[in-house]
Length: 78
Image (cartoon, rainbow, N blue to C red; front, top):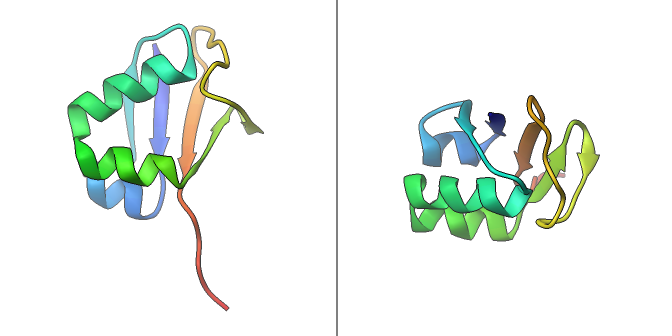
């Protein structure tokens, strides 16, 4: 299983700080999460960064058992 971690507004959308999913790639995990959490989740992912174990990745990145995928939404401020 892969731990998918949520930050900022993503926590509001999902109602959680993390969830467990299985999948071979980042795209697999994000697709399962989109099915669970819906359109608002999908829109927010589209403008967010996705990291695996602290490294920026692409949707095609392969996952290993125990990897942690983090969705980092855009931050505003000044």
